[in-house]
Image (cartoon, rainbow, N blue to C red; front, top):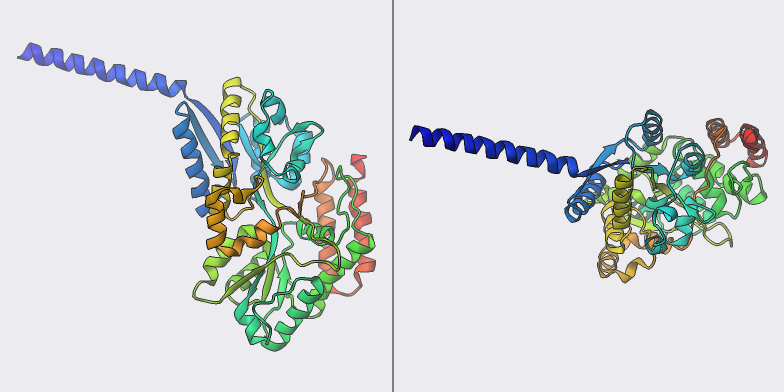
Amino acid sequence: MLSFSLKSATLGAGLAVAASLGAMSQAAADTEITFYHYQSGGNYEALRAILDEFEAQNEDVDVKDIYAQSQQITAEVQAALAAGRPVDVATVIGKNIVYFLNNTDAVDLVEASQGDTAWLDGYLPNFLDLGRDGDAVYAIPHAYGTPMMYYNKDIFTQAGLDPETPPTTWAEFLDTGKTITEKTGKPGGAHLHASMGDYGTMVMVTNAGATYLNSDGTEAQFDSPEGIAALQNWQDMAKNGMMPIATDRDWSGAFMGGQMGMYITSSAALRAAVAASEDKFELGVGNYPLFGDAPRRVNNSGAALMLYSKDAEKQAASMALLRFISQKEIANRWSRASGYMPVIQDPLSDPAMQEYVDAFPFVTPVIEQMSQTVPTNVWPAKGTLEAQTEVRAMLDELWAAKRPASEIVPEAVAKVNAALAANK
């Protein structure tokens, strides 16, 4: 018995070692790819669920996700690339794509597709333009938002306004905001500025028919009559008392708390706005206001995905992940869960997406603005921070309202272009 027990123990130990070695061998055989992102909370849960599903269908691939706050994601990815740490797929803020193309060794997705680019054709062409360089494509849309108007129907009623008829033009937006403030004492409305103020400025002037930056990002051109008129609207929001001078965080907090009539911000805030308004106030949504007779043209916010894998196995695994994410059903699921725009053509041909829109009409402006979305203007490699600082200073002076936009804006554009001159 003793002999048998010892042999059994030895055999058991041997099997355990063999199993352990086998597991180690299997683990070593797996390909791990590193995915940088800035999704948190519910958005992270939705993203991780998609990554887990990909892993389940690709058992030899592990996706390691690395989180950084949206304000730090650019620096984190740059630091990892510079240090030689693994970066296979990276989330890149839209306005920084040109910088990343010029200063990092990103992979052309067309070339990496080895002739089979049908998966790229599924995206809206205007969304792919942001990452296009000639025949090459270096970025695919992933977390794109569109600016839309949120409004508090209860405050509209208190101000004697029709809660079912939100403003559709900038002139109406200004009048409505002023009325709300005069009748209720609450802030009438605000427009996000975002980060250094460049995104909010870009959206305003682009929607008015002006050009924010030229095609290669080396020259600001929003000192045109259309650009100046658009930014005069922003000054008028401060002058007529409807918009308190504050940060995006302050404005968002006031609106979500039921203390502001209207707020123009990204569609990425839609889920949060719906949740915040529940049992507090009746939420309304609308399209971004039109500027006179100009057609609506709105720049996307958010970020795209870029490929950095050079190792053959990691690049193949990363391409498989990008193709998986690009499937209409997966892309639409991500949009529904996160609140970001659908980025695949004809999203409503997906029955699940059509059912979602029917049951959740708040998302209607997002769907409508897909075809009206134009790429975010991107900054060049040199002088960007200084240029953005000048834009931020311009907004502060506009809101102080000591001089009109017709004097402030041309001076600011000249300073921005001086900062960008090194790129020419």
